[in-house]
Length: 93
Image 1 (cartoon, rainbow, N blue to C red):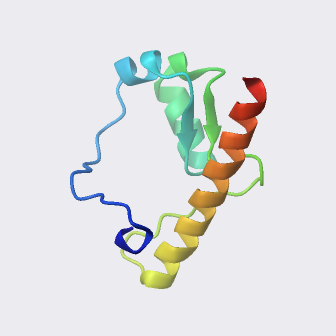
Image 2: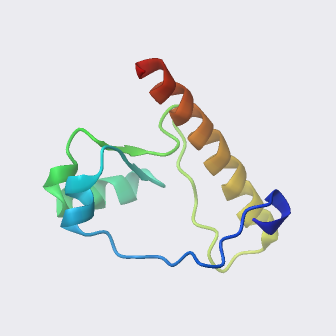
């Protein structure tokens, strides 16, 4: 991320809570299994829970404990998914 000029030093992962689900307008999961799991655990996500790669119909694999190429591939998919969602949201404005 530093190579992209993004400082993630202060970022910390957190467990998804019911309050987060209630307050969110949009929730993006990395893959279909995660989307299903979140939906089952948090019914308040109905209608606002999608995959980040939904537009391209792709899951984003978890690169944890894999080499740099896996992280770079996941980052490419994340960037493409974020761009697609940004365009979709802009059209709603």
